[in-house]
Amino acid sequence: MKIQRRGAHEVLAIGVTEPSDFGSVDIDRLKADSKYDLWCSLEGHRKAGMEATLKVKKKQDKKYAPSRAPPRHPRGRDNPGRAGSITTSIWS
Image (cartoon, rainbow, N blue to C red; front, top):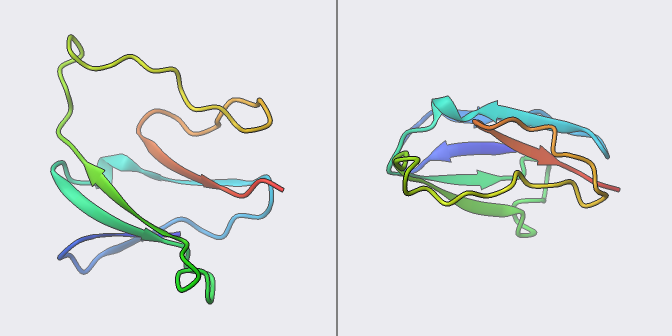
């Protein structure tokens, strides 16, 4: 997966993941109040629609931030990504 802030030249990458594997990039490298384009860098995947937009907002005051449970793996396993990371995976 590739991640690029709109208007920037630098492209961040998460390596190829095999089925049931995970990859991540530290979100400390992402800038607040920015939009990022994400896409699968495997040949033909972006053209097939494997792309998304990520909007990064300024950190909210905990007093007003919504509380949410961390995302769960579709098979019931805890998501191995940690707070502060973007995780990509392929489940087979």
